[in-house]
Image 1 (cartoon, rainbow, N blue to C red):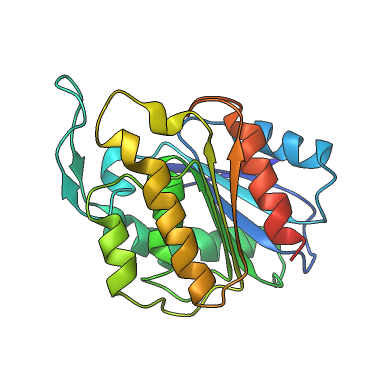
Image 2 (cartoon, one colour; image 1 turned 60 degrees about the vertical axis):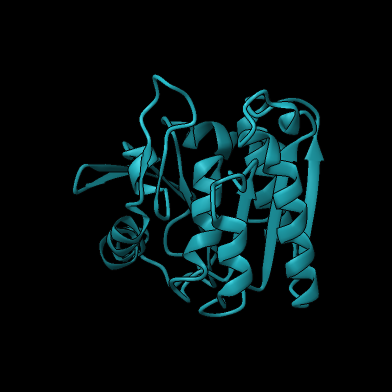
Length: 224
């Protein structure tokens, strides 16, 4: 593993340099890149390189627009996704590619929870990501289902992976409880657009085996 730091973001790089393997960009809540990488190898994923980005301002940089807090004592969402996406595409990814010393066969964007929502959103704002992984993505986010139904992708992705835990819709919070209905609605939309897409339900709640769920999504897009 090698590492970079760009404008406060820490990037951990996994995989062989000077190859033409796919490059998966993974936005992480903590520093779980190595755990996801290890799970991918346990699943016998096809060869790829991984750039795991951490030290994100989670509720700001991954939210597409401002939205109130879900709970009284939590911070709200300030809608900084466009700004972070510019940093990602203009500075972080070029630096990663330069460090890896390779021309990747394609770029994929992956994420869990709010980073999974961001992965979908990014495909509406830039055309550089060919494949998308939204593992337990925050499709409950207010206005997001309406957004994807009223906007076009910059470039239609080659494939999209969606997943949730099978008890996530049982959340007591009324907003969070909409997550499965909205994920299924988005899944049906992408099917109607003739995009290769899968929606997978995993056992457990939102916090169950996050690294494994992310790795399962990465494996699926690599195999398409």
